[in-house]
Length: 90
Image 1 (cartoon, rainbow, N blue to C red):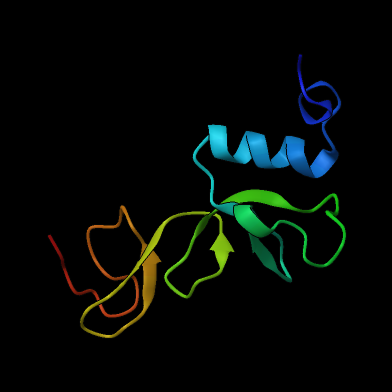
Image 2 (image 1 turned 135 degrees about the vertical axis):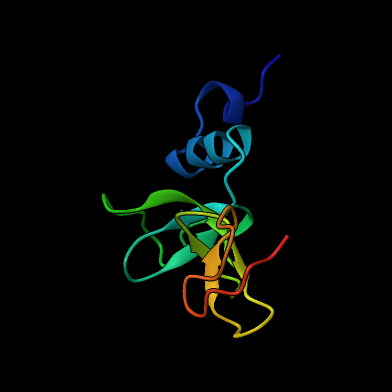
């Protein structure tokens, strides 16, 4: 017999399942972000929330990021060089 969560999940349960199945770390918008294991600590998800990835500062945002070892700027992980200082990394 299936559990009630499987048959009739809440919106938060559906969002959590989607995020996990698609490799996302949580949700974010212009003002905040939350991790998949603790969704919507603000008690609501608004229409501006988007799926995102864990950032180097511990927040959730639109893409994976890394910190430049030379100037400590936050840059997209797939960048070949720092967007701030131009340092090149492997």
